[in-house]
Amino acid sequence: MTIDIKSMGYVRVASTDLGAWKTFAGKVLGLAEGRGPNPEHQYWRFDEVSARIVVFPSDVDQLECTGWEVADHQALQAAREHLQKAGVDFEEGTKDELDERRVQELVRFRDPWDNVFELFHGITYESRPVVTPYAAKFVTGDQGMGHIVVPVLDDVEALRFYTEVLGFRLRDSMSMPGEFVGKEPGSKIWLRFLGVNPRHHSLAFLPMPNPAKCVHIMLEVDELDHVGRALERVKKNGAKLSATLGRHMNDEMVSFYVRSPGGFDVEFGTEGLRVEDQKWVARESTAVSYWGHDFGGGS
Image (cartoon, rainbow, N blue to C red; front, side):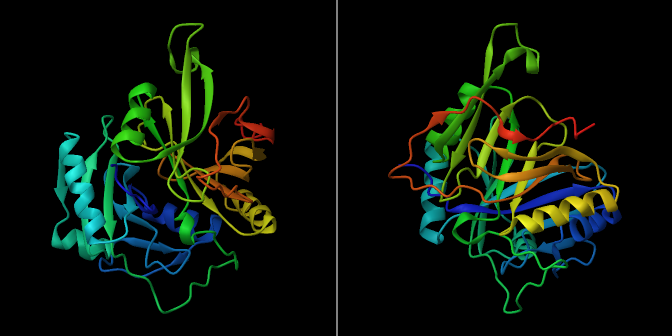
């Protein structure tokens, strides 16, 4: 028995420059400004959920935590018992935290590499339809808000922890030379891509430390033209392109990467692969992409 996570629900981002985030989230990514309990925080919407990305003032720029949705109180209670048996310390969300996230219950814990995860249920959604600034429709629903790639230090233990303790399912793997992260020549490191719903992967990990506590998050739109328009806004607003347009091998996403004010990248894409667990076979892809995705940013 493992935890039954349904989807990636939200991210919370600590920021030294809320003005930069306002431009980036609103004008580059084209997210809609939402409302929330704290007037000093930014609440960003791109579907019916009250806020998928919350940015709050801090003396650091980094990802604070990722929220993962479970079905209901019973599912969260089962998750508490499972974490306890697995020896994972967790804490209950305070009333203020529940109000801020607009969820009914949550528990918070850290993975072995200090990545903070929150399991929650009962998030609020809005009667007012979301109208994004550039009319893009984002792909969410049963696939959750997107995916996240987190930094770890041990790829073997990370695979065990995320699959056996948290219940993620292996969807794809990619090996890279160990020298890439300072290991001995001839060694291999593994990137693993893990899913919980029809999105090809909701969580992936890279065995390499990262001060932003996040490698990238991915947001998906429903049409290629919205990706192209966003790419033009990157240039217009002076954001830093981290990778040119390309199509990934594993999830077939057509996307580009842009550096956020949080120090991590945002992958902005379309045409991501939907999978069926009953039929899916995990494989090893031999390249990052079929074409494109120059991580020199095209320079």
